[in-house]
Length: 434
Image 1: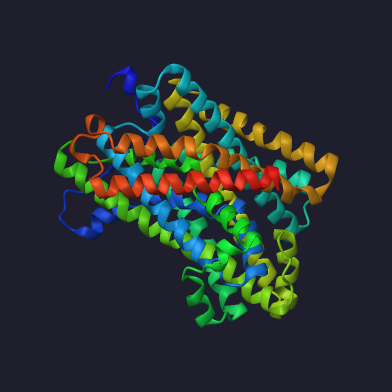
Image 2: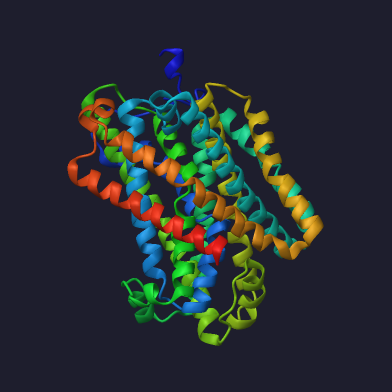
């Protein structure tokens, strides 16, 4: 492979063997993993505040928004699989190869800002969890969570499967915690099912629409599109058209199953919030710390708050691991410049830690929620600059060959891109213009 097309994450590129067996489940096991690394971006602490606020204020109504945003995410992540398998490039490399150097540089800067913002929300989420569970001050919690770089470096040295296994374990922990929370909160099953149906009130109620746009705008993480298009290439499929189609099929199944789990977790956060707060008269709960303090008293289950805190910690830590990989992929893909893993992680962490520490020290610990919201706004700004190139590339026959999006998928993908851009523009206008 030429220097121009040197793979990102070269130390794990094509490192996982695919069996020649015809067994569906053996191949599914071999291809399974990347989707779960991607799924953590859809359940990171940045999403918790909007889910909690939506459930406490409007009950189950906004479940339809969570469902819609997850369906869009499944579509976009399937395009990432298609791009990575068909071209041997990740999204960052494709941008570098097919855009002018000036445009490519601008996209890289925007992406780095987005990753730093995402890392900030995840770092604060982990720090908040440590404070709630163990009473550790936020300032120290922020510093402690920065040490996860050591975990990632150790696991990458062992092999990429170990990274996937850790992330899957953390995602499973979040899922198990919210199964328990849902059981404790005893939601109204009929109300939950009706919540997944479209409701005109969402468009008519400006406050409900604002939270709905927040859920949509914070769900699809731009760095996930770069991440997924790269890590699907950790699988060593044979370089034939038939095997490429097989890799696309199994990679898409993997991400769809993983994102369905993310759909359950996001739904469960909103359902627990609705059942616990909305129908008990606590309709203004919008912060993670407040939700933690009220869960056990309102549910009458002493362990409920602790389980919530454990889920938050697992969510924050799994998200920071994948943000690290995404940062490495973006820098190598856009700049062809390979930082040592420890140095890349240190730079990313400093970009998140410095504003977090400054804000906490100057404005106090109550300012963390505002900082998380700001990070989601920054992510919304960056999102169109990742979604539009992805749809462009996968719809380009000259680049994709026979793996190009069919006509129906082109229409659907561009429709999703337009909706995401429109909703993010609306979110930003409401955020800055009130």
